Amino acid sequence: MVSNLYSSSPPPPSEGVLGERERAHAILLACRHLPMPLLTPPGHRARLLAEAKRTLERVGDRRTLQDCQQILLRLSGGTTIAAS
Image (tube, rainbow, N blue to C red):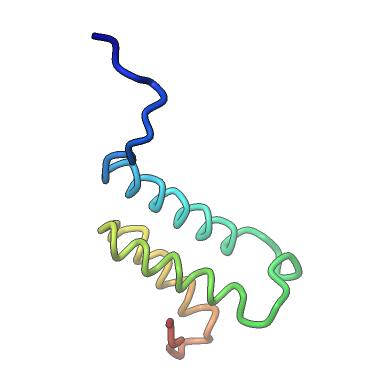
């Protein structure tokens, strides 16, 4: 029997986690390297980083999570940012 390549079944959970991790990494890189004018609305960079932080916590990527927390700390000037 030939397997159906165009199955409508959802991807395995591990693939979803990989996609989430990649998105969090992309957000982290954008916030680290893009100039401030490209992330113009006030607080936009902090909201993106907070989203990346939650995702990294969920997928268990501790090393990148620490990097994200360092950027959040620098962004906030050493004060904490409420991430909700």
